[in-house]
Image (cartoon, rainbow, N blue to C red; front, top):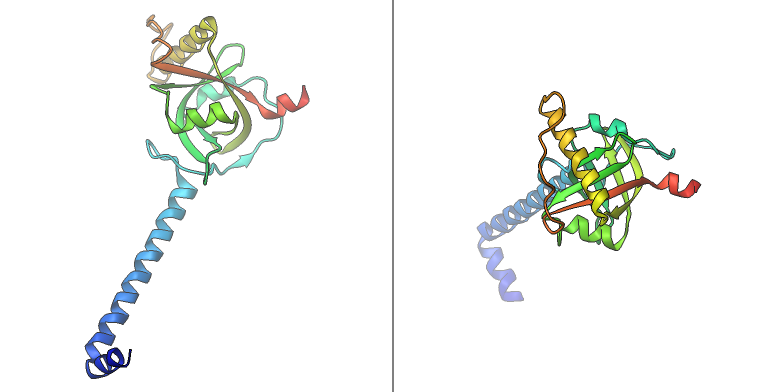
Length: 189
């Protein structure tokens, strides 16, 4: 130890190098913390997942989700460890007001696996966040209804008039749908 102190005492450039290295490490750590906070507070962004959905929390029961069709993409937050996981997803409401989320090649995705394990989630539409419960749809007729509703919304968003062209629903392994129910509605039942 004494030899190291003697070496540093005779070579002041070592002290300068050490303080430069410490400064660089502090700057890199500060940048990493800033990047994490920006991601945590701003995303999901396009295809980049995020963590916590921020917005005005809506605790009132929602039984008619048709207003969700005005939003291009929904953002869903599911419970994962150590942080929640939030992504952008297709969402579509039927004429009766039922809301569905859908995804292609959904099996094994982080969000869908989490939703199957714990159906409690949060849904953001524009700046409002709704506590919801997700249930994977397996009934063929309900899957067909969700698929037709999705096709109609996509058709409208692309500026189409009238009914969309009939496209057969992909098989269950290629396309999944989840029914979304307001957690407040469930609490009132």
